[in-house]
Image (cartoon, rainbow, N blue to C red; front, top):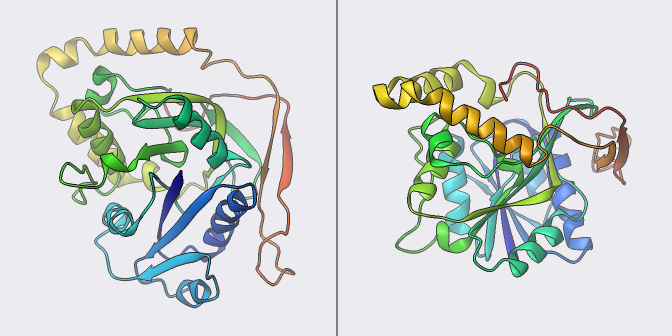
Length: 289
């Protein structure tokens, strides 16, 4: 099983180096993966850096935003399973092998979503989010209960005549619109109960931007009176489902990530640094459940 991982890039070379290291060592563990970096015209040395990385397929061309860049990368991919990993995200050790095994054990699954660790720019733990397979009701409300960094999907969803790609008109909620479109078509998602990736919350993320708030409000504003009146029922059922699935509980755990190293030729630590989390929490400051 071959993976295609697409990374949309624009002016984030320090993060991109870490991102690439976390994908490259998946190969060392036996995963078959192609890494496509779709760069939208960075001026920070990204293009020059990509020329030094024969293990990465780097493409520099103008795009109309992150979702257009992801689409462009997907169209170039040759994998059996696709994903996208933004510059400020990393895969955890063994992620691709775990996802490969899960897909093989669940041949009817079209998509697999895992759990995600939210960290600061310095690598320290902030919180975690366990994936929740979304219901139609939750998606209708504009909520996305899975983190894109821990989401994987079979090629048939994004290739061929029935492909569902991202709508570049969305600038912050394109992943929600894409998931809703796939859900409406009956795509089957399962959760893999393990941490698959890290996501950096540095306060400047697109999903927390004014544009994201604007788009979220537009989705909510388009709800029918009936759907607004029954919102509390949908949310209540979702909280109950999370509780039953262990969303709000987590034992102490370790995670290992790459960090910047100005003394290394690559600018990246030669090995991952391990962090121990003694008091895990699902509470993400500034975010809802």
